[in-house]
Amino acid sequence: MLKVVAEHPGAFYQHYPRVAAIVTVNSSGRKNAMAVAWHSSVSFKPPLYGISIAPKRYTYQLISESKQFGVNFVPYERAETIAAVGGSNGGVINKFSEFNIAEDKPVKTEVPILKDAYTAYECKVIENKVYGDHAWIIGEIVAVHMAENVFQENGMLDLSLIRPALYIGGETYCSTDKSTVKFLDREKYGKK
Ligand SMILES: Cc1cc2nc3c(=O)[nH]c(=O)nc-3n(C[C@H](O)[C@H](O)[C@H](O)COP(=O)(O)O)c2cc1C
Image (cartoon, rainbow, N blue to C red):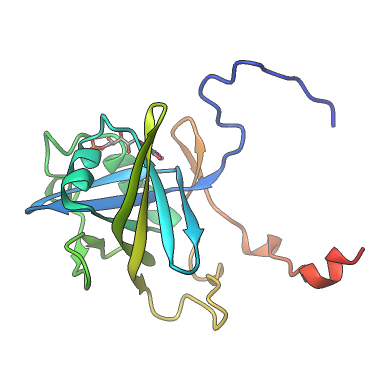
């Protein structure tokens, strides 16, 4: 593959698409939601999840106060909700009423769980460290919400039922195509 090389990456989107999620928070009744593309599982045991949030965000202030956050995964058909909460400031408007975002009840925290999410994690913050212009916030997953019948027995999402919302940068979203799914046994391929 022929490549060009940039020594100053600027805003680097080259590794996208990424699953776009919605982080939710509730600090003493002040609820908010924002879009995140920068998030990752960190550990199975204990179950840890990390989110990267710029300290200037209103959401960051609320997470710092409440030490809790939710990570909600809505399908591609709800990408407009991601764009809405990712394009507005919760310090100025109530995003839940403004964008008609319906909630389910959390079980172990106070964070809003989105009714439209096919899965959501409730997390309690264990670490918050600033790197450059973002903070990497790690939370222990204390509850997992899952839509019924959309996950297979092995825990994998059934892509014929749910299309994840992927963000490719530049305000552009896409999704997966079930026809691309292939099974590659790592044991078998690792021997070659
Ligand atoms: C698709 C998408 C992904 C985003 N990912 C992140 C992210 O990972 N971290 C971050 O700090 N901001 C991210 N943003 C920006 C915030 O969602 C945005 O600034 C939001 O308005 C913050 O809300 P708040 O001011 O109510 O906290 C993203 C925005 C979009 C649209």
